[in-house]
Length: 63
Image (cartoon, rainbow, N blue to C red; front, side, top):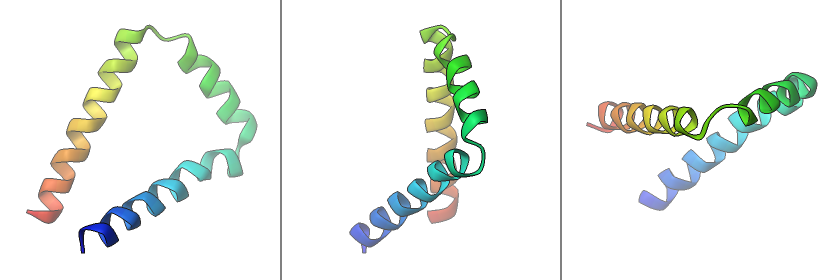
């Protein structure tokens, strides 16, 4: 059961990650160039917020 859930989450991640390059490759390139200019501390902050929100959503859904 755990492996099925993990693989389903990975599959959904791949689908979502593939949307931007498929729908708007030029926009994705512009966005990535802007992200590359951000300081490391800002990227770490976004990463932390993303992890916390993801963990809370998972806890709420599976709770």
